[in-house]
Image (cartoon, rainbow, N blue to C red; front, side, top):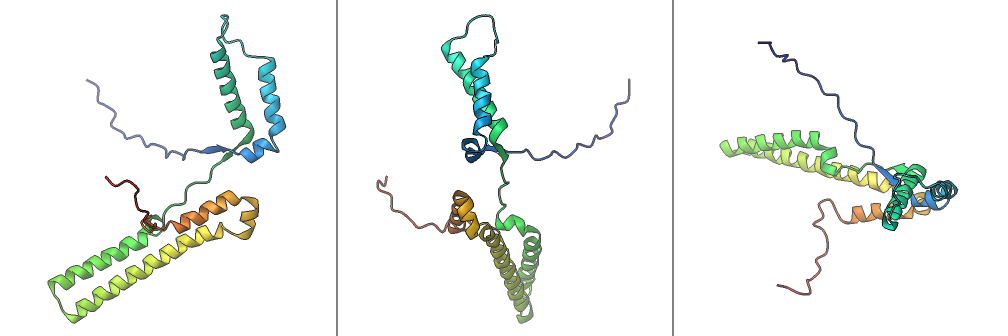
Length: 183
């Protein structure tokens, strides 16, 4: 019997997938001529996939696939990655402060005296201060994307940033709307 090779192979870290989005503004304006040329090529010289004639629905499916391919070649742009929430950005410092607070709470519960109570209050205060700072920093990244120049160049994205700020940090700050038909 042969001895098995037990060496561990290290996997290379995978690169994050590129998410591409079709930019309709480019497609309608700047890249319109290129797109029209590519579609025109397909219509003038349709690919002969099989010797048998294709049905009309198969021809339309082929045309649709070609149009999608052309638009992705001509007017695709990389989508900006989603902004992480405020907690994941400040997670390391918050976890340390939470551990300090929990430890202070345990010592206060074991030995309830004024000194341990003051340490617990300080630990809670430090955690709350860091949490507020992390939320303000998170808001600042959205606010920087909503400058006046952004509204004139890309109003849809700037408006989306405002609504992300308005909906709050945990989406529980929405106004309650009464249901029309209660069950």
